[in-house]
Each structure stands twice: as structure tokens, then as C-alpha cells.
Image (cartoon, rainbow, N blue to C red; front, side):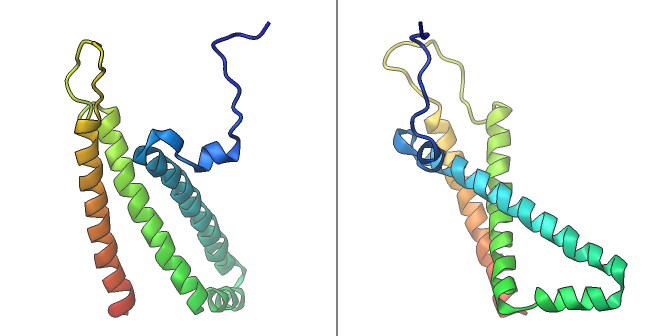
Length: 145
């Protein structure tokens, strides 16, 4: 007989992508995962291209010519955006895990209070700082070079 407290995950990938009833934090969680995978993919590609230097200057110049186009320039900017979001959201998560954004302990009396009143301002502040970093980086990336 099945355990009545266990529920099957019938959402599959839809549950991974969609926030459902969990709110904005769930979307930040999903975006944090995606940006982590994007930064990791860039890191692997960067190591691969950089390691071509070991095969001589001809191989190096060939790879650098391949990744010097406008498509890769936009891709580099997207990697910078992903890194900025991932870094600021990671700082927010670290502060929450360390207990700085959880709020004081309270007795669980109905209606239950959540720590969202403490975490939401932190989320807004971190996303605002990430937005400022994106604007500064975009100006440097597109206007100054």
C-alpha cells in the first residue's frame, strides 16, 4: 500500500520551469538554476578555446577568429548578465541561509506569519543592485568599446 503522505511528481519539467503558486521566489530559483548552467557552459567553452593555445598559434588564431563575431559578442554580454544575476541572487540566498533575512523566531500561531516581509525587501534590494550593475556593465560593454 502506498504511503498516503507521499505524492507523485506529476508536473515533470513544467514543475521545474513554472513557479505555479509559489510566487516570485520560485522564478528567481529557476532563473538561478538556468544562469548557473549558462555560466558553467561558458566556463567549459572558455577552457576549450583557451586550451587550443597549446596546439600552436595557428589553432589559437583560428578559434579566436571563430568566436570574434557579433553573435559571440552578444553571447558574451548574456554571460555577463547571467553572472551578475547569479552573483547577486547568490548573495541574497547566502544571507537568507545564514539567518540575516529570516526575522525573529515566533511561535507558530494561526494565521501563520512568514519571513517574506523580511526577505522581499532583501530581494528587491539585491535585484535593484543587480540592475544597476547591468546598466553600468552594458554601458561599458556597448558604449565604451
